[in-house]
Structure formats: structure tokens, C-alpha cells
Image 1 (tube, rainbow, N blue to C red):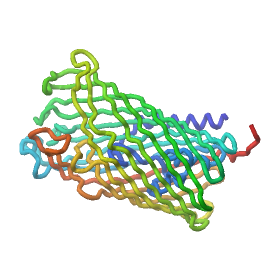
Image 2: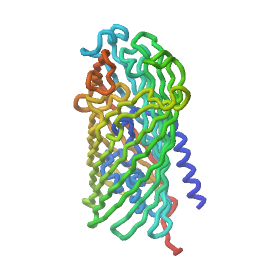
Image 3: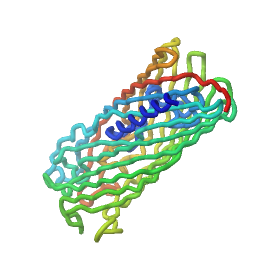
Length: 438
């Protein structure tokens, strides 16, 4: 029990680090998929079926039954995005005149993303677990007098998800899992109140805790085959914060206004399959559906004084659903070394019809490589690398029809972006399970 307490303390240390970690999101809009070093090395193929190691419980809590005794896994992913937005023809001449025609430079911040997992086999059929993750994050920043400053200056999202889980092995071929989520979410969005150089800003901030569930099932229909289906529910966030105006906007004078906003985070379904080809080679496949269309229009409502109950502004996401498809393989060279690789493709919830300057996201192809080193029976280390290539039309077109468009001030931007991801992980097994009865 003392070992379990120490391991749990490590996970909550990771949660504290997560509060400081922000990045350009790498899983559609402001979501982060970098929750596993082993998973990253094979493009998260088969993660819901256990291919991502102990961290597979992020996608499917039922996968815990594949890991005996008391085990913990800690990961840190380095996210190194690069994104530049340059105004092009179609942008308002006024915006070009006041903000210039130069590009934004790199708007995306590098970040370190921690995650931690703990699994404890209580009996021969029952497992308890805990996962601590940063499932959402974003940090983009434009130059102060940028031509698109009325649409965005700075945008940040921070989160921490604490997820206790339980799994039960019904038979040798069927396992079930269930968990609860406590999700902390915080956001800060700023923009200029006019296109004039050094224009005062408008800043919207809010934070809250929300609750949700996770669930999953794994089946082994044949020897060497594992199929997993996992679910992460929507989490309702009732954000409270402030709207700060440095100048009059419409009928609102400059000042500080208390506000509330209700935000529904997307739920997600993950399907994974693993197939052992030889004792050394296993291939995997994965599919994810993320219900981003939950994010439509989010009203920001005053909660005090003369603005109490009045909608002060609206965040018009109008997202589509997101999809991710991946294939991967793992090859055990010997008892100590394992090599991994994979390909993934993401259909973003953001297109030219709803893309804005805060999250200039687009479809992307990921190419991944990974390696594992087993030091001894208890301790192993993993490394993963992935490069993300954007595909299709990723330009920003803030014109009539885009929900973010400001009347009379179109902005059209050419976007160039790519991402490098590096992750390191450590897994420690405190011992194998020995059933002695209850």
C-alpha cells in the first residue's frame, strides 16, 4: 500500500506541472493527443486495445487488465509547433495599412506536456487505476500591432484531468472498465478593440471544474487478437471570469465585467485493434471520433450589476466533428529492445468556413517512430518522435460566411505550419500480482 501511495503522489506532481503546460493543440482544435510515449511512437494505433502500454487507459480503462500487479507510467512530451500567418489579397486595405503586410512570425509556443498513470491489481479479476492528464491546451500569440489584431492577439487554454478508474476481467476474453473525470479548464482570449496601432485590448478570462466519465471494453476473439472500444464523455464547464474592455465596444463602456459561460467539451469514441503476427511482430490500427460539433455558439453572459443576465459577446465556434485514423507496428528485437512506427491522419473539425486566427488548425498527416528499452524486470524506458504535416487548404478566410467575420474588415491569411513531437516515458513495475484470496 505504501508503494501505491508513493506512486499516486508522483501522478499528482504531474498534475501540478500540467497547469503550467500549454501548447498549440495537436489533436484537432485545442485538444492534445500526446498522452503516451509508447502510443506516440506508433501514431496511437491500437491505443484503445492496449498498444500504448499502461497509458492505453486514457483511451480505454478496460485495458488495465492487461497489466498485473502494481505499475506506474510517467511521460513527458515536448511539443514544438511552428505556425506563421501572412495577410494576402482579400484582406481589408485598412487592416493592411494600419497593421502592415508582414507575416506574424511563429505564433505557437513550445511546451512540455506531462501525463501519469497508476494501475493496481486488487484481485485476480479487479483492477483500480488513476490517470492524470492535460487533455486540452493552446498558446498562440501575435505581434501587438498585427494586421489581424481585431480578431486575435493572445489565446491560451490550460487544463488538468484527474481520472480514477476501475476495470474488471469478466472472462479470459472480456474485460470492462469505468472511470470518472474531474476536469479543470481555464482560458484567456484577447484581441484589439480596433485596427488602429496600439489600440486598447479586450480580454476574456474564465475557469471552472467539470465532471464526466470514461468507459471501455476489450475482447480477445482469437489468440493474438485484441479489440478495444473506449469512450470519454463530454464534460460541461460552467466558466466564471471577467471581460475587461480597454475601450468602449458597441454599447459597452470600458471597464471590467463579471461573466459566466457554459462550454461543453467534446466526447470521444476510440476503436483499436492489435494483431500478433509473430512472437516478435504486432500490428495495430486505430480510429477516433471526436464530437467537436458540440461546440457551436457559446454565449458570454454578464453576472453582476447592469449587465446581469445580458449576453455581452458570443464565441462562434461552429465546429465540425473530428476524425483520426492510424496504423502502426511494434517489433521486439530481443528481451531488451523494442522498435515502433506508425502513420496517422487527422480530419480537423476546423476548415476554411470556420477557421480563425486563434486556432489556425487544419487536416494533417503524422509520421511516427519509437523505441523501448527494458532495463530489468521492473524498469523500462520509452522514446517517441513524430512529425506532423498539414494537408489541404489551411488558409484563414475571415470573410462573409465565416462566423468570426467582423463586418467590413475581411482578413485572408496564408498559413504555413508543422509540428515536431518528442516524448520520453518511464514504466515501473513494483511486482507481479499473487492472488491470496479475499
